[in-house]
Image 1 (cartoon, rainbow, N blue to C red):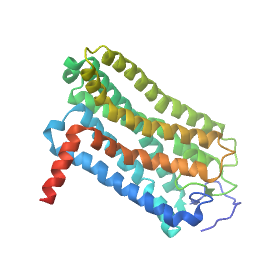
Image 2 (image 1 turned 135 degrees about the vertical axis):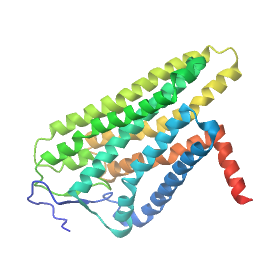
Image 3 (image 1 turned 180 degrees about the horizontal axis):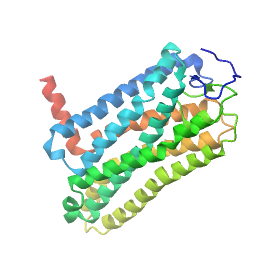
Image 4 (image 1 turned 90 degrees about the horizontal axis):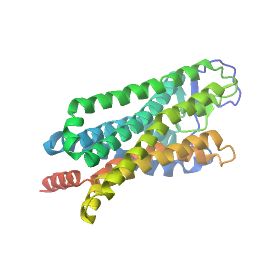
Length: 315
C-alpha cells in the first residue's frame, strides 16, 4: 500500500479510500452508529420483503413497489457500508481499480433506480386517488413488472458510462480518494486531464434521472392535491392524504440529501474537508434506514402484521 501524493500511472492498480478527512481520530466511534444503521437497514428492509411475501392482503401494486424499494436499499447500502466499516475499524483503505469501478457503478445505478421507484410509487398514488375505480385495471401485475423492469434498464443505461469515463482518464497525480467509497466525481478529480466531459455527464445524469423523476412526482402530487381538495368531507380528505404520507416522507429523506450531496461535490470547494464526506455517507445511510421505518410506522397493514409477528414470537 502506498499513500504517496504523486504517482506515475495511467490506470492505477489500486485506490486508497481516505475515509472522512479530519475525523480520523473518531473513526472508532463513527463505526458504532454506522454499524447500527446498517443493521437497521438489513432488518427493516428484509422484514418488509418477508411481510409482503407472506401476507396475501399486501399483494397490491403499492407494496410491490415497496419491495422493489427495499431490494434497492439493501443493494445500495451493502455496496458501500462494509467497506466503510472496514476503514473505520481495521484501517483497510485499499480498493482495487476494478472494485472501485464496480462500486461506483452500483452506487449510481441503484440511486437512479430508487428514484425511478419513487416516481412509480407517486404514479400509483395518483391512480389510486384520482382514478380509484380504474386502479386495478390500470396497474395490473404485468404493468407493475414492466415499470420495475423499465426502472432497472434506465438506471443501468444512465450509469453504464461512468466506469468507461473513469477508465479513459490518465491518473498521474494521486490515488487517494477523500471518501469512504468510490464516487464518480471524487475519482475523476484525481485525473491529470480535462474532465469536463465527466462533469457534464454527471449533471446530465442527475437532471435526466432524479431531476425528471422529481418533476413527475411534483406533477403527480399537484393532481393528487386537487383531487383531495375536491372531496366532500374533511375526514375523507385526511384519509386520502394519509395514504400519501409515507411516500412523501420517504421522498424528502431521499432527494434532499441526494441533491445536496451532488451539489456539494461540484460546488463546495470552500467547505470543510469532512463535510462532503459526511453528506455523502448520510445520503447512502439514512434513506435506506428510514424507508422501512417510515412505511412500518405509517402503513397500517404493515404495522399490524409486524405487531402480530412479534407478539407471536414472544408467546
